[in-house]
Length: 506
Image 1: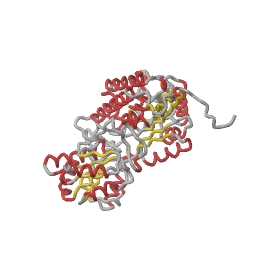
Image 2: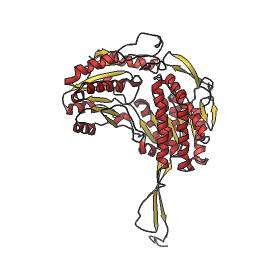
Image 3: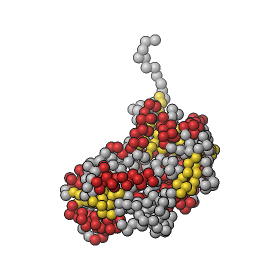
Image 4: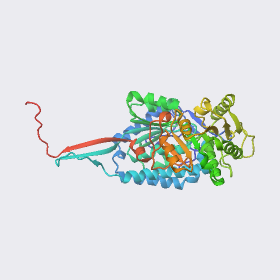
């Protein structure tokens, strides 16, 4: 890998194979959320830097070799990138932990998943047939449907899973033969910067991979509207995603949006029939809500539990939530890190305050923890919080909190459970816990969510599409659909024995 971020200070914009400072000379400090101290310095790009990066990507696509590189060679490069990610797993995992605040183990797992994504898209594109033959009903006609790269892709990624979310866009974009400009979150850009170095080391031609570090209101907005950008892929919040779609609309660009979620985790009483089953359901409810301090678009932030087991379930859930060990993600034994910023913590606090004012009952958490040796006073920590007796009129139930807050609702019948789970503007993911296989299939089939887990929560498969219904977005990532997002479809019709049509006199 290249120098550490500290030594790369101000040269984190990459265009046409060169590391650059911002045209304006502006920089931004990257803050460790565990102690609120800066630990890296990056370039603060703007529209001018964005234009340079897009021009490099446009030149590389229109006149470079990458779009015409055989699929097998593109796949081989993606596999080399995966090997480099494995080689640098510890360093990248640590960087992800310090940048985003997650535990070191979560950071390591993220890097494993990034490598898996690169390998999956390498295998997918390498195994494809060169085209789909269409029977035209005549031996004199050769008709085939082929897939071609779109062109220049603008990839805008979020702060919660910086490298993982970037890989879900970069790997299929490259597999399809595109060039790209990626804009990571200005809060957590460091591992994406590191990935650009790995792509270069793997042999990617100059100009194919470009990055601009900078804020959304300048870099992201310019990418969305830029006339030389062919596709915009955005993962983030609903408000920003709406702005991206509006900016891209005049150019009729292809737009892929993966937005927020307010995800139900439905627990039926029969899923708690034995002590082991009960413990598993509680453990998974904790995992659904509090992994990465709840800063996950697919977090199971709405526990919808059958009334007959609610009291016992919530009591045990709250007891265990109070025992979650908060601290700096790099410390041994820490189970949950800080929130990503002071702004994010203040947002979480406002949701909890409004919920209590609207009648919710606090069962655990609900405040900043006391400082400790592993939990600096300046860090952006917030206790895992369980709010009982919640209902759909509460803001905390309707809106995406993106923090360690779990709300509890109850139901009596299957129909009521489904109605509650579907009563959301979003439709990203959800979970169903039941020992009844028939009920599991019925409920999963009725839920209006892009991913439904049965007796599990949070796993994803690179082979499966990831996306949502409603205001969770219009894009699809991972799986064959994820590759299709980055392609154009062309029908090539060849007449082997052309004859005059003679429709017109002459």
